[in-house]
Image (cartoon, rainbow, N blue to C red; front, side, top):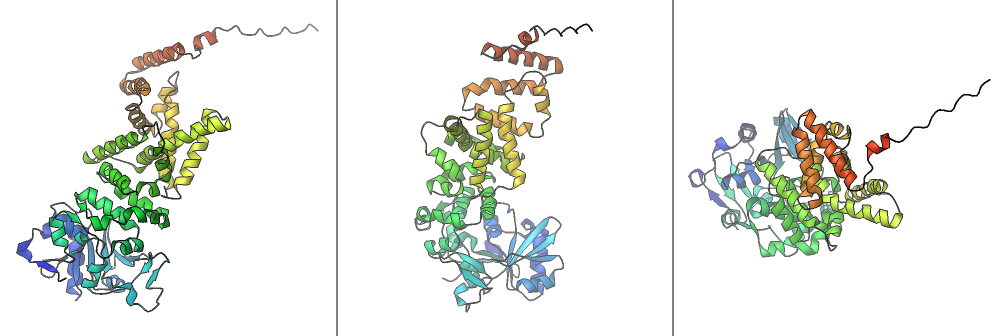
Amino acid sequence: MQPVVLTRDQHGISRQQISDNALKVLYRLNKSGFEAYLVGGGVRDLLLGRQPKDFDIATSATPDQVKQLFSNCRLVGRRFRLAHILFGRDVIEVATFRGHHHQVNNNKNASDQSSEGMLLRDNVYGTIEEDAERRDFSVNALYYNIADFSVVGFSNGLKDLENRSLELIGDPETRYREDPVRMIRAVRFSAKLGLTISPRTAAPIRDLAPLLGDIPPARLFEETLKLLLAGYGLETYHQLQRYDLFAPLFPEAADVMGQDDNDYHRFLELALINTDERIAKDMRVTPAFLYAALLWGPVETRTQQFMHEGGLNYYDAFLLAMDEVLGRQVKSVAIPRRFSSVVRDIWMLQDRLTKRSGKRPHRLLEHPKFRAGYDFLLLRAELDPKLKELADWWTEFQVANPVDRQQLSRAAQARHNQFGGEDPAKARKRPRRRPRKKKEA
């Protein structure tokens, strides 16, 4: 199919919408005699009236040629060799036009596939037409030409974008086997852009979902951040469930959801709604809070199992459950230690927040993760009426003056005593043992 070309006056993209650094790279490549295009999501989002988060560039220059043109360039990647042009914290990614990997004669340094058809290495270069065929979805096969400011659309991409349809380029099963992550990218683009996944694109997903188990857990962690921490996590979660993609990513959570008599599914929805709302308000979010919510159900379930089957007390069972659930989860989606340690803090605070006597609540306010633990308690209280009094107490305690805090603490202790706790006042009235008299010499 011939590409569709929109001239400068036929589309609404302006260079003022493109970052200065991306324009610098495009202009230098073009002036050096290479083809240079803004490509993929950047062009797609601009045509949809959205401001792109990143500006990626495709060019006829090889990575080594790009490096010669830019002193601030570094080459990255093994599976896909890319050039990163660094402008402080701003990174412009430049990729050479991809060719068809089957054209290479057994050069394992350029192209390689697993026995399941997944691409292990893919440094085969070609033309813009071949590059477009290698793109995943037609709405990403769009190119903005810096030479004449036209937009070039391949594989019916411009029409699919107009029709709000998400179409995979090529045979869906083959393309998913090449890179199973394309299945969760389909869900992400659908939720983010409001596109409908076409029947042919959706058809193989449920059967091929287990192939996500072949993807390195570290890569899937980065992909889950894009899925659930971009402001449309709730809709993404629903689609992951719809296409059986949730279980390969979060097997522990999926297993608990399969059990009866729990509100875990609703709890996750509330966590995602909370996260989406914070992102919409430009408030800070952390992956640790969402992962704490995602794995809270499995931790609670395993804690009860260890207590009933192993005879452990709650604290020991809880510690063992945390270790087991996190240990299993990182085999599917790796959670870096800087986040898993915060997840543990949030979980541990749930028990500590129930201790409200003496100086304990004052010390807890100084805990570096207190706010995250408190927010998690509020989330739990939305589904568990038994936690509402505790959550309200901490809400009031935080803003109270020192005198009111003492009164709140005494009131909490009185409530604890009323429901079977030991009265510390009585403990203080216990007679002390008199010291023995020294025997006379």
